[in-house]
Length: 326
Ligand code: TXA
Ligand code: MG
Image 1 (tube, protein in one colour):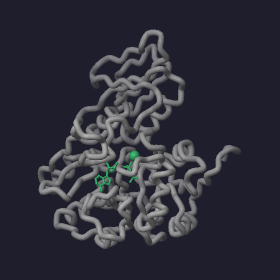
Image 2 (image 1 turned 30 degrees about the vertical axis):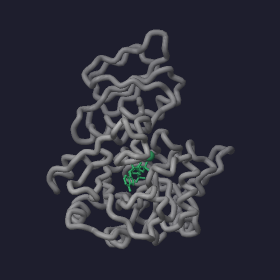
Image 3 (image 1 turned 180 degrees about the vertical axis):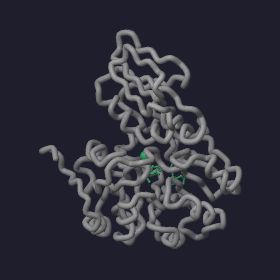
């Protein structure tokens, strides 16, 4: 551990579970990104999440549960379509927004009637949730608006001293946040594209709607309040170009390239992150935030990124790129 760091990294699940039960903040691995967890029934602990991340309180948190039975206990209604989705995709990178019961603190849902809930697909997360015995509210474990963490060290880099414990489960396998689907609307509505491709959802429940944000309303009044136009953002200027376009460094500027596939020639760049040699979107997603973070740490003036094919995980990756450059 670097001599200056205050936050402890551990693999001790029962210590982490005790910490959560006692009102502490525990960062933990999921298959998507690391979460910054607190007992969702404890408003004081939940308030600490917002404070620690400097997150606006209009932005609701996702609640994590160990299994479908626990999810049922937190919602007023668990419709047939939710059961179909749970059977197909839980544990996994799908968050369902369902009408909440009173024991979920209003702070968690930012006063909304629906709560976003998921069962994460990561052995340590599932062990932690079972051992803690409480629903765990957890946003991504990074300062608000910044790049999401996919390793325990990323968490400590961003939140050192502001989280009580980090449960270290190695790098996250999926690499982008969960797909958020609201079941509060007549037609199920995707509020955020994510680690579960929309095609996979539609193969199980048929056509879904896509929420579009309304630029004339402020961020707190959007259908998915946390989906800000600038988010997931590096400190370095980021420019996105079409997937087929040849990337050229900016004259006189230290330029970095975020790309994928073996064919792109990257001559003249000061730094290059190639997310996947074969342009495989799963590999791109798994490496995406770490690649962006690495470029952001290299004192560049500009990062140029290729957009992704707009299918499967490419939809979520393009959404993150758009907001990161917003
Ligand atoms: O994969 C993930 O979803 C990760 C891991 C830790 O589970 N969590 C995550 O949380 O990405 P966060 O806070 O970074 O993003 C949560 C977003 C909110 O900003 C909002 O857009 C949407 O999910 N959301 C959560 N609860 C909602 C609700 N009740 N109604 C509408 N949107 C909600
Ligand atoms: Mg986040």
